[in-house]
Amino acid sequence: MTGQEERFFVVLPDHETAAAAAGRLPPGHTRIMTHPSGRPWVVGRTGAEPVVSVEAGTARLVVVGHCSASRSELTALAARTTDPAQLDGPASRWAGSHHLIASVGGRTQIRGSASGLRRVFHGSLDGLAVAGDRADVLAALTGASLDRTVLALRLLGSLPHPLSDRPAWRGVAAVPPGSRLTLSPDGRRHRVDRWWHPPEAVRPLAEAAAPLRRALEEAVRVRTRDASTLTSDLSGGMDSTTMTVLAAREPVALTAFTVENDDSADDDVYWARLAAARLPGVKHIVFPQRDLPSFFSGLTDLAGPPDEPSTALLSAPRLRALRALAIGHGSRLHLDGLGGDQSLSGHPARYHDLLRSRPLTAARSLYAYRRLAGFPLADAARTLLDGDSYRRWLTAEAAALVRGRARRARDRAFDWGGDLRLPPWATPEARHLVTVALRETVRTAVPLAPARGAHADLLAIQDAGRQVRGFHQLTSTDDILSASPFLDDRVVEACLATRPQDRVTPWEFKPLAKAAMRGITPSEVLERRTKSDGTTIAAEGFAAHRRELAALWDSSRLAALGLADPGPLRALCERPYAPRSHEGAFATALACELWVRSAG
Image (cartoon, rainbow, N blue to C red; front, side, top):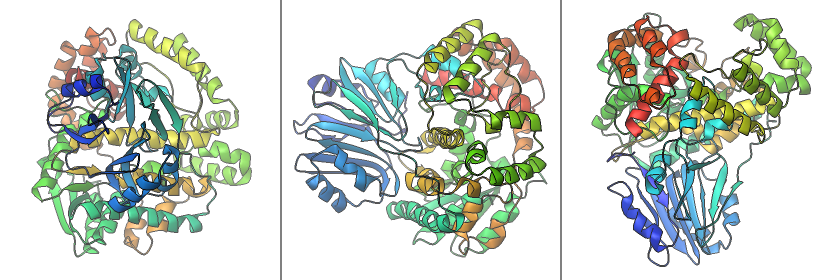
């Protein structure tokens, strides 16, 4: 459940039962807007987040988050709106990241973002539909309990769509990213339908650069309009450098943070300093990573968890220390480059699509890609050449999981999704719950896009949105907000409109970002070809805290729920840290365990 500082909002029907239930919401909430009757409509605790509410005629609009539409524009829009569908056109042009909540003629409509960074959930309160942006708040409001099936599913190393979208609470449903929730005037009926569709990926790189640059500039500008003192990540990588460079062009006081690692192979600081030297108006602070909590420290007493199990929890102490540093420098908003990898670089499964539309282009790129990555040719060919539908793929994966044997070797980079494999600590009960869920899902499974690569691209962006949303929930408070403009809808659209062969290429690293930022970002940074992974400091943190982590499994909540055998997990805590054994399924199990302890 949320603590004293976490942000949330709920949308209530115009009914005395819902009005009375508002008293059960977390402390510190306020009425953002009321129904014409005076009963609460939008209620929440928004902290430092911008909120604009307007009304005109029969329409009421509330925008929560950073939005390029001004109050006067929103008022004029409300005045001419007689049907919620009329909002689609104007809202599709707004920059920023926000929720739009509208009441037109008594009908309420709520929508978040296409990337999944801003979510909408709904549930039932004595037969009345209630909605909000946090699943745990709705669970507490409606009396929903934890869903053991979802916790069992979260033990899978890779969750297929749409199972990755299920909230961890029974009776709380998620609105898919890019869809909206419409509630009837009496609050007893609801409908979910799509408002967003990905653009056609047809722009050559030369034509795609300018729209992306404009989208990024507008994304940063809408944040600087609401906060005059900012901080930013400046890791030395292309994505965080892009954010810092664009923010430095705005009339704000900007401080950029770079964490320096002891690892001699980590050259982040060199590139960060090179970029900062070209930004004389930016205050650049470099500090050793040892000034932050070590990896795996402070995990046993976490408060204020996100509203779903997330590996973001494993970074919570470090993220919160960085937030405190930003607040200490007067910041009200912290910019990062999260989501840039997924938005700027297309998923390798796009080659499956290209083989069917541009076979020679795909073959040349795959040849070069194999020389760089060294993947097994037979596995890749088998995966690239098969024409399995999404439902057929999911059926085969579910059958393999039930048998306990993996399918014939495939290259998952080119597939519909990852390998569905339960870890050795999953109990027979967990296996049963996962099997039933998969069988039910297979009957109605529909991909995010008809083509495999387009589906994988969208899934990667939505997975990033889900992960970054967890980061934001852990760090955004009454004092400061976190912002990840690469996951803004307009930015995502500009990236997805680019031809796949120009986003997914072995010839160059993030060519779309280079084309968009050429002449703005220092050219040396655009040509950087190295990337640090942080394995060394993760291993050091694990070694220092392995006994604390092992003790977690002695009183495991997942074990008490009948989902995990603590023995293999405890044994992993006794072994030296290795990415292959400690970063995948183990990290997922650890995050689930921590989340259940904090949220349950």
